[in-house]
Length: 97
Image (cartoon, rainbow, N blue to C red; front, side):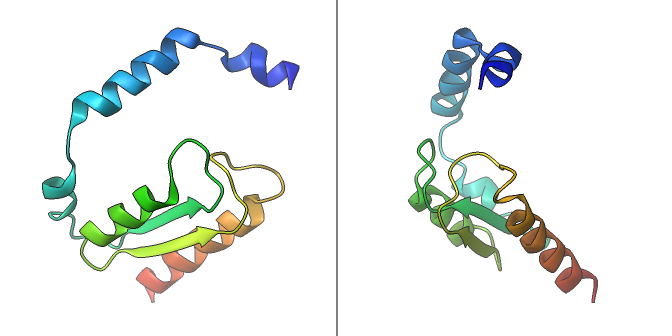
């Protein structure tokens, strides 16, 4: 925890990120123009971005695939990395086959 905190503790960065999200506005029109295989991977326990937001993104991208990782929060951890990797690999294989 200490290493992680020392590596990335930046309160100003969090405020800038929030301002960017709020200032960006709706992405719906842009999402609807995407024409590539699209995977939305979202944790069911994400405390930062609710699952409904991932579901909404997938709903607005034509033919998007939504995968929800049970119990995953906002970060990829050692515990959920194999699950995340499997979803990404499976998606890539489905696109390339």
